[in-house]
Image 1 (spheres, helix red, strand yellow):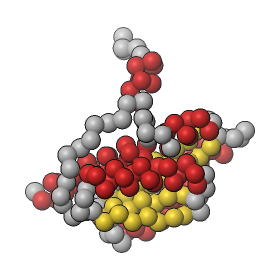
Image 2: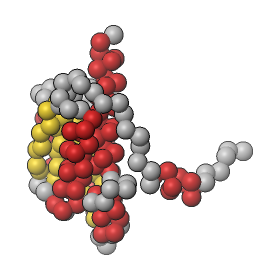
Image 3: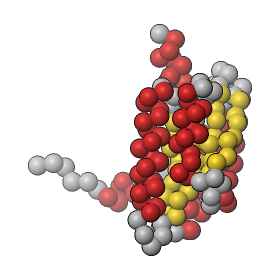
Length: 170
């Protein structure tokens, strides 16, 4: 019989920010592709990501590319990946659930496209296009410090860039 999942434990785990990876002195190129829609929350993600990147990767070049909304993020990420412009890319967007399935469909579409781009082009893409049921969830994860997903994205992007660099040296 399969083990039962402890939902309470899983929920608690998602509220814990991952440990910081080691600081790297390597030159890295990171691009943040950020939606203009739900600007307040997206800017919170971007600000936290930039702050963490500046701490973890002092010699990194960080640039930001703005797009109209979450739906436009994958096409710009694909273009950047195809041009080999970045060691890794962070995709930032916020999708708020409304009364229809649009948000759910949009989230799935963007997630699938970003994963496909990362695999096809060999450029890590950290997906921080987030879906929320309400403003409270968005505020907690985008603007506050305790479980900020922008901070998490920066940690993940530095870590995966280090992994990819190691693999490519072998």
